[in-house]
Image 1 (cartoon, rainbow, N blue to C red):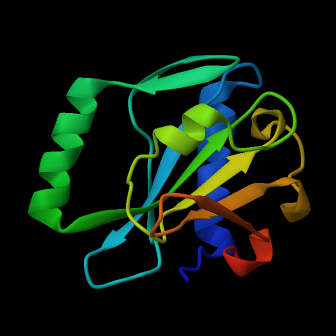
Image 2 (tube, rainbow, N blue to C red):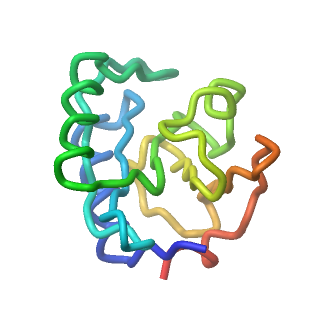
Length: 142
């Protein structure tokens, strides 16, 4: 199982807060090199957002795919916000950034605008059969 350090996670939370400004969803990706399992960088994609959804820019996705190939980057987790309570929506289930087993999805409540106790997060891991398995945040964030 991968581990996201509190420092890397805080970078993600800070970006989610700046971008969403307390009223729109936002998404970031936790990435690592091919030979590293644990993310060391947060990538903030160009995206459109509303209070209830986000859509990553397709041109940005193409440029990022090229960067991944050149730099050997792997997206290990997506971290995004919801307006209220954190949960995994049907859109979250069906359209992750990466559809590979062990990919992690973290949902942050209240647009990340207030203090985030780790027990307020929703964390799940993609299983080989395509199902998502909820886990405790402490299993990922160290």
